[in-house]
Length: 505
Image (cartoon, rainbow, N blue to C red; front, side):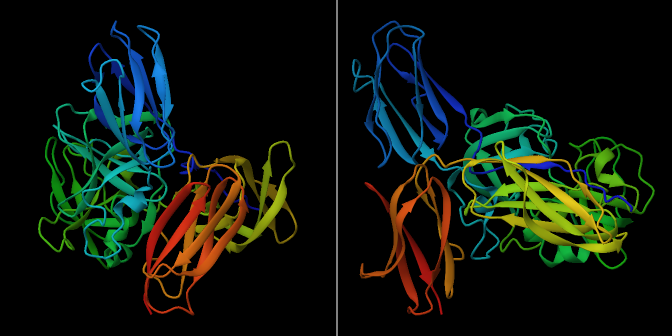
């Protein structure tokens, strides 16, 4: 039996358990510094006294569902910490020095990059243009600017550019997980998140795995380049057909062909590529899907940004490489998506997917058929549904047609309970006739999820029971209803969240 290469790479970007950040507020004699800021839900505020006068931090207004606070500091160096669990606007005072000594902050939910960059109306401009958002992702590019900061990050759902004018010019390493809060902007066709200042880029961990490229033909890329904006893509056996390889300190637009189609690749002078020896063509090339189009409707000027000379220009046939990436992503319905691939297979009947939690033994939870014998790369996926919060260990059991088998290495995925009640926007929306509604519950309890028409009349009850802590989803089938706007409401105790959806038949 020929072994199937199974080198797993766990991309630990489980978005129900994002990395928390601590925001420090200095309590001086007559002010809070900073006096106002933006923070992500799940982050912590830490007030620390440096002034000698008596002080408190006392909430004066909080969003519905959020906890209030009132803390009397004991003296210089004393601290108070508050975990933000609810999105909205907060204000607070020092009772000894009010109203002059006051502070405020705005809390926003952490979103996936796919949510941030979505363009549902397909007008080539992000739907959340101008919105304040919080995202987390792994850096996988150099800084594409000399005097500014421009790094691409990926969170497993999509990638995007994080841009900020300098000074200062920030430095991050590939594999750094960063938490960013800023505004969604659109520049020359590219969606960007622009942090408010350098304090809104925070490294939460280092040495994380970076995304593997999606291998495409040039025709596949050109068919829908918007799909790959901000994402890492790879192309096999390309030849330079126009443009001159750039010398040191120069940028260049080079046109490459695979014999059927041609795409522009932008060699940026802020990378380590310019000035390197020109490769012998053809080459496999990896880069980031990008664009340069400064006029509406922003549907042209698509190009690829290679990042590094050593990793992004490879001998022909090198990609897809002989490694398998296992990506564990927690979906809104608390499912873990497992993906893996093989570079070649011989006599491969299929894969049993095994899982264990805690001290329990492995159990078989699914089976995926193999591809028999092939020298071509094959990709596979499996969806593990309805998981409770906890740490899960996965492995694959590869089985031959003759009954022989081998195990892959083990990998872990953490599924944690959400920090707050949250009702998600239904998807798809608009819809016909079915749509999925997801919601997060931080603690076990009785909840109702109901649908109402525009007259406020209840038309459907989707949930009316005790649910466990976690992320849940239900399907709403509106086949019997007329086209129009409907509202759905999540109620849990004194919490009531409502969203709107549109049925189009």
